[in-house]
Image (cartoon, rainbow, N blue to C red):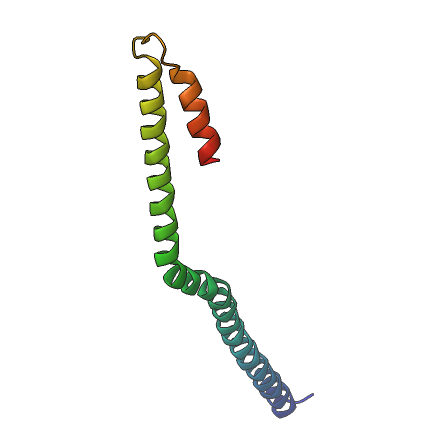
Length: 104
């Protein structure tokens, strides 16, 4: 092999190496784009769901807290009534049971 053939072979190999390197860079770039797309595809429904469902969830939690407050007030009243001194001829427990039965 003379020098010209050797230089031509080295040049051809360098060009092929350059083509492969460009393909790798392009492939790497598309992998990054695809990875970002997959992340966006995963988080987009979560963000959109949070935005659209947030008012409904806040309303639901507000109602739940109101129900808890009503329950606490009711149990406090019931305890207060049961701790009243007994009045002859007045059956407090019977009245409470009738009220509980009527509310259910």
